[in-house]
Image 1 (cartoon, helix red, strand yellow):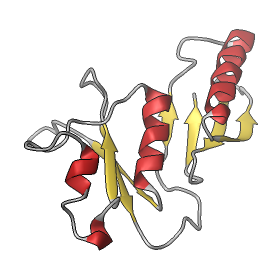
Image 2: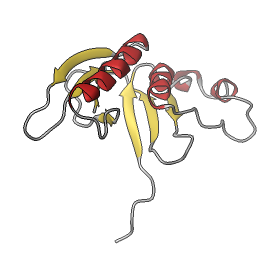
Image 3: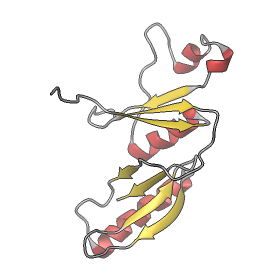
Image 4: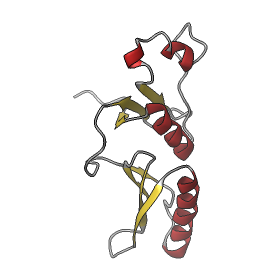
Amino acid sequence: MPSVKQVQVTFDCAEPERVARFWCAVLGYVFPPPPEGFDGWDEFDRTLPPEERGGSSACVDPSGAGPRLYFQRVPEGKTVKNRVHLDVRIGTGLVGAERLAALEAECTRLVALGAVRVQLLPADDHNESCLVMRDVEGNEFCLD
């Protein structure tokens, strides 16, 4: 069986560039270079038919370690809970008050970027605390 070499996570959204900018800021990702022959994505976008302009965006981990995130415009809005979500690993290795402090600090930073805090899931016998949040278009993710 062949091994998987790369993973891309795709988000359906209304405003692909807006959501991509949010996730770039959250993860320290960057926009990939534009296609060959173009100085920027705006220049490339202007070559597309009007109905396709602004229809997608992407961001990548500059180190190449993380998955590419792709954002595509869809006509319908989000109506139910995500079946897949991202865990942003802020508190790895931390426990108790130290972990909560790290989660709260990152939550404050992300709320300033447009995220919404949903719920703190406190530590139990099996899991450490995590914070459920929503991105700028309502997609759930966790600070873990």
